[in-house]
Length: 267
View (cartoon, rainbow, N blue to C red):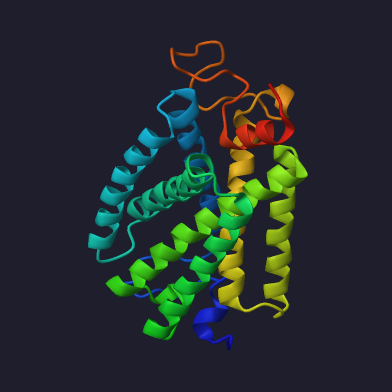
């Protein structure tokens, strides 16, 4: 794909956005907020599912309703509204995580299969998007159809990032901070490839978007997990030593830690 004016600005360069465009400019601050939103989404899902003992099914239902409401507000807006946009991103990050969790935990689908399936679905979304609109530029999200394609792609990037990130954690049994360092390094490689015209803007943007999901999740786990497990022991919301009835034990407080326990036979 040619690096035209729109595509050339997809990665990190500010662009002049039309008033009707529904997404923010892609700058360094965009990526920082994206990682933070992913971290918040990951921690919120862990809080509901594990720490408060709500369970995967109930958490999925609550997040589905919340996402439907937030997405409706976003779609009804006629311009980019920061709090609406980033609220949807946070909830989509949770939804993408829960899609993978339900497939692996409830239906026994392997992470290899889910990684492949979500890769295919993401590719299919891009194909349909381009055939319909003749562009994949995020600087032209000016119609309802394009916005639906955009959010579908966002959902599949989170689901793919969850599956691929968990697959790496499961197969390599890396700690939280080393995992975050690996994903951050891959993003830097993509940025360098884009900077020196070895990668197209569209590919660079979406590849980085996928990788920010496991990066944010690893950082969230590193902050919340116990020091004995390689984290900082900050927890999700509740202070340590004040678990409520129904909370899971302190040694299983995030989905990533659960995966490592299953893989290594801990407990």
